[in-house]
Amino acid sequence: MSSECLILILQLRSTNDYGDSEVLKTRVYEMFERFESNARKFGIDKDKTRLAKFAIVAFLDETIISSSWSQKDAWLSDPLQIKLFETFNAGEEFFNFLNELSQKTSANKEVLEVYYLCLSLGFKGKYQLQSPENLRNIIDDLNLELHPEMYKAIDSISPNGKPRQSFVQTVRSGLPLWVYPLGALIVFVIFYVIMSTSISGEAEIVVDSLKSF
Image: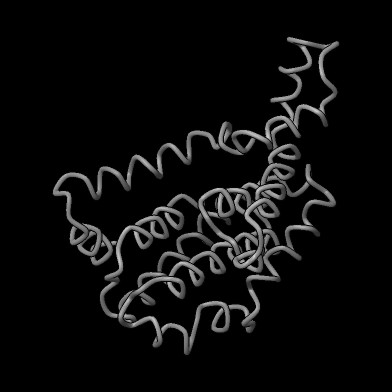
């Protein structure tokens, strides 16, 4: 459901030329209309759809505001988060919503997966200026909540081995745990962007794909 939105964000992160700001906003609004339509088809309730949409809006705004795009100021004067959610504090509210959703992981798993994907693909929010370790721990913990099957496999291989928490600390000292189970969606998203940008080896193709989005 969120793949189209994440593909757009990764496309934007691969270039600094997004074209005209109003054209881009029109494309984004159309994308969110499809996002909400798909959510209805899948029977996802409005509150969950709104929370998932908020995560993507926060990530999209952060991507653009952090870029070197020549029309960034025009976007900053009227970002999506204000237009769609009447807030200019999405970088903090993202994590507030994440904490609330995490109180009932099983009931909110679909929405939490969207937050997890945003974080795994580079969203930082209020942790932008903090130690990367703080955000990495949040991603690792969220991964544990969403993908407990990893630990069932670990326990079956070595039921008398290291305690689970010790294992988590070991992983954190090396590769982040979230690297492993991003799943088919991430593979698809990255493959799409690579194919979009590597054929000519030039960033212009990304702009062209955005214009035809």
